[in-house]
Length: 333
Image (cartoon, rainbow, N blue to C red; front, side, top):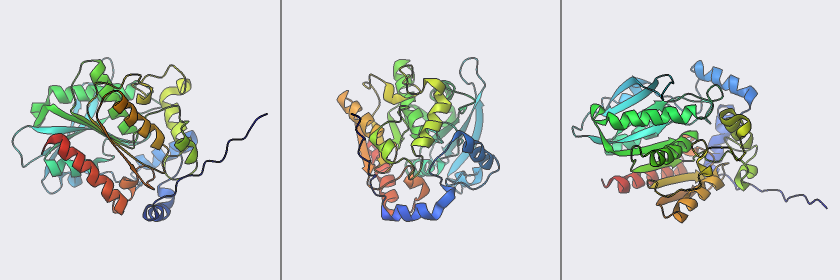
């Protein structure tokens, strides 16, 4: 006899965030399909306003706080060069820690300016250098192209840190959503390849598990931002028919890693009302089980990327303040 599983009741959105989501309407769509991906990219290329601001160089300079430079550096062996967006604080002389930033966009959207507003807030607070990498996107460039581009940029950053006013021994990996997944993958790659030794990984609502089958993924289907269908679109673009099989590399989907020991301290956060909640909680728990260091925050009623979409909301302010406090402890400054 076949039994029907009980319906999964989603947790409620924070009232202030729910109101913001309603105001954004179609600017912040719930889902993404292979068919609507082309439309989303066309809007992106046309420079149409989306839900997240893409800062100009002038905006990133912040009235002289940062020097902004775009530099082309070698990519992975046999692959095209990559572009790095470099923001250096102008008011400090000694080499400073660097945030190595990997942008979000579900592996299929976005560029290295996405997510820079809060990253620069962090850099301004502590006088940090920011390097944001432009990586090739799926489906035109499936795994391992995106993560190998990011790793090539990380190697260049560590090897040329002094040239950009950075301290090669104090690199922090950071990213939101797909960028958070890439940052987690870079921590694994750097450990396994005996590469640069980051001092921390700041993973905001990271996209970690291609299986897309957690209770939160099912609960949030058709709700909020980046629902289960959108997640399937992103992972399928990156992995093709391998998605969900035993053949998926942990450098594509860090949740597949069997060993999470020996990683730099992690900060992981997510909303209670988002697709990635359960995989993010599980990743933090597995780091603890491996003897590692992780700080986990699950913000009640938060949808995916809520603090970027509604930065003035009280919950967003709390989330951003918590990340700054973690950076303060990590840097000892």
